[in-house]
Length: 437
Ligand code: ASP
Ligand code: MG
Image (cartoon, rainbow, N blue to C red; front, side, top):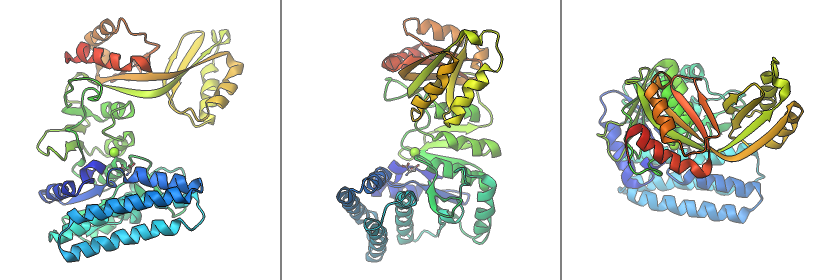
């Protein structure tokens, strides 16, 4: 059971989490994120130190310290538990204050980022102890690891985690940190922002858990972006492939990397709501459940690159040369469309755009269009459902679509639109594909 930042971000929420995790029939491993806002604050502290702005870093540290002092005031009530909580906070903030005095490094910034999850889990453990709830505190740094390419491996995690669990067969409740891990150099590292979901699914895969529950503050994955359209509905069931497309193409509720360990081992993933624990939520498993369109998601800040060349006509090996340029700069391509004389691709990382364009120039005329949005229509076998295409294009007859990707998978149709038309497109499709207004 993984709980995100908002699920543990207030003392009363943490109390609620304790209730939920103790109502289980099976033994549970609880994975916690940092309290909401903490990781952002730690990023700021790291950035300030990297810029040698010690004063700004100190101000951030003190503000965060106060936040935790207030937090424990309501989290625990007995003098013993308050004392324990104060000690934990003092220990971690002392560490941050020592860091202010030593020279900054990349490795140190990872240590700073790790404080959030260490604090949330230790405070939660103190609360459980106060309530007399038997549990074991399981340090993630003892079993979560990434290789030299920053990739985790289920087998490596299983090899360390399972013996740890085997030592405590009587225990029904384990508490560990999301996000943090050790890297191949043995240093503290992390699974990148939002990585606690990834921790949860890696752990579930490593122990062959019966389910990986991701608890957030909404009742599952919705058919469209609730911030943009008026009416959205939760999706009951998704296949791993559908969920991967949705998570990647914009559904913020789940980190995209979280899907593959689950898919690899077949452990179902459930998205549930801490505020409404009885709501059905979304179940992600091997089977799609039903056919047809399930959801629309949008991904912003997309850059389209068009390469136009008459040399492509009847030539082979042209695409390889183009792709090699993107590979060289470690820039993933999201969408691709081709004609006999042109190729369009999209990317969402602009870090090496200048170099990429420079190296593509010998191949033809290059046009770069920024501020694009990928709108992804996701469902089961939608490519084989003629009404979907019919509805889609009828609904969108007024939108200027700059690329369409169809047929790459049965589960996805992606459209590229200028970002200023995103909201309108999502609203029109909500009506056209789901009949929701
Ligand atoms: N606390 C980390 C973050 O905010 C990891 C997570 O919450 O998933 O990115
Ligand atoms: Mg998250």
